[in-house]
Structures are given as structure tokens and as C-alpha cells.
Length: 265
View 1 (cartoon, rainbow, N blue to C red):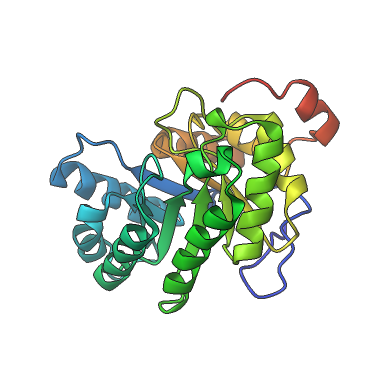
View 2: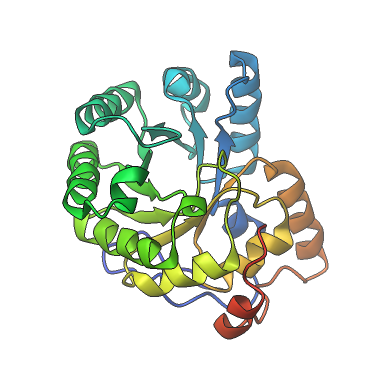
């Protein structure tokens, strides 16, 4: 099965169909190392898991970027980190400093949190400027920017606006959640996000994506990256299904996804 490449002009709006390889599934995962209690040894174990399974990236705390970079040197796994995490309420100048520092430390993917209160207050110019500032910094290192909305706090109308502002600012991904709010990724929100951005924008689901079935259902509606902590069990399941010739994207229509989409995964 062919999946979109990261090359210019890639179209992420059409969900893939058919069989997947385990490698393709792994390449959609950002292995999350963001829990506040994680020690350097925990980060080392997480990086070992990421390298063994060749996932897309690890997403670690800013203070762990150098550590993760050393552990992942020579592997294909990118080091990602967060900006303005988890509430998005830092000033733009603080976010820019944080982003620059992370890039200097070796991060190549930045998951930034929007200023949620400014979005809810309809200060769209502020939100757009906040995102654009991080995009401009990331461009100096060729880094990707994923913009976290924290959908649990947003109406559908606000979610659509956030998608448009993010796309206009030049970011690479729209992302559902930090994993620290009351709810995480839902099918309904993901369908709305996919519909609200153009084909070159990617959608990342995070917050409660704990099983392969959940992940594959979300792939079917156009999600191309996942924040996950259950990487080992998810990929073990993928290996078992692949061995039986059963690792495939399910035939889920957007309409059926929305009908049952209020469920949080």
C-alpha cells in the first residue's frame, strides 16, 4: 500500500486503503515521554523502545532533548519536544525562546500549544501571530511544527477557526490534545479537523490512543500521526496481524465515524 510522502505536494487528505506493513504503522507513531514523573532512566528506556521499533519520533520534555538526542544518534527516530506545554499560556516571546533552545539542543519536531484563552476570546490575530512565530523559528532548522488545540476546551466552531489559523500560519500539523485535559482525541473532532484543512496539512491524534484498532480507525479517516505511550503493545498487535495477513485499514466511512464519533479513544 502506498502512503503519502513528506515531499512537497504530498496529499494527506485521502485516507490510505488496503494492507499496511508494521513499518508503516510504526512510522505514524510519536512515542510520548511527557509525563512529569519520568526519570532520565525512563527516557532512556523510551528511546530504546523508539529506536527498536523505528517509530517516527520521540516527543520528550524540553529538559530531556539533549539526553534523547544522544541516545537516538544514528537512528532514524527524530527527537521532538513541546512548546508552551501543557496550557499554551506562555507569552509568544517565551515560546520563541523555548523553541530556539529546543532546536539548538537537537529537536526537529515541535509540538506547540496554542493560547487557548485567546482563541476562546476570539483574539484570532494573537493566535495566528503566536503560531507563526514558532513556524518561523522552526524553519531555520527545517523542523516540523504541530499545533496542539486542546479540543476538550473548544467548540466545533472554535476548532474550525483553529485549523484555519494554523494552516494560514504555515504549520505542518493540527493536533487534538496534550493528553493532560479531561478528554483527548475523538473521531468526531478528527473528522472535523481533516475537513477543515487542505491536503498538504497533516492531522495528529493524541490523548487516549491506546490500541491498534483505535489507531487504524483513525488512519481510515485521514489521521497520519499519533501520540502514543502504548507503543510496544500496539506494534506487537500489528506484528501478529501482519503475520496473519490481517493488518489493514478498516473500511470506515466518514459518515459512520461521525455518527459514532463522540466516543473518546
